[in-house]
Length: 253
Image (cartoon, rainbow, N blue to C red):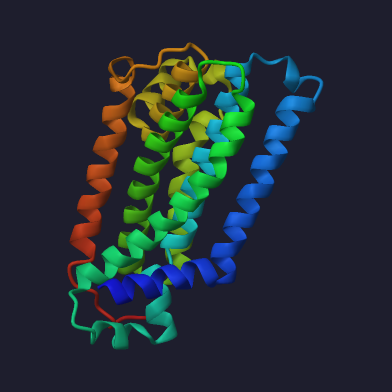
């Protein structure tokens, strides 16, 4: 298992895709931080709002990265014809999927570490630095683990990289739409409030808003936002456990 995990991690970090995500993340974080601190209009925002915007970008990018990377992990091996040899290794099918999940989480770990200096710089002079780092890490890790688990389950079920990636990205768009694409006026309607209540990403973003803008930093104050995200993680892991119990190569297109 350790050898397989090492192989997966090396494949992610030394492949063009893994390196591209880390380089792109650094560039995007740099651009967002630069605009927040130098743009004439954005610099008029309260510092808490600046940190919130950066935290929102970090979580959203982490979710997209995990979905794009994980949705082809199983189906990609099947289409490349390498799954048969992997299944011959002396580990269970679920352990194979778990190693792929852990490799995606390792990329997120580096991704998150890269984001910490940007959070620290933007929050200088406030009491929000520790809260920003901890809550972005908390919600980012839970959501990335959930989305990665769900995407791997989709990949194992569909056995098609194209179909898996399209399905995973469609789910991500649905989850991100209420917070990133809908207007604040729409979100205050009864339908918008209902979407926020059932959407785990909305709960995570709303919690960051509460912590960084309203300065409500204790876990007790954020519990109403934390538990729906944890429930979402449990559901995604359950689907992961069901669809990776036995990996079938038959039916690969």
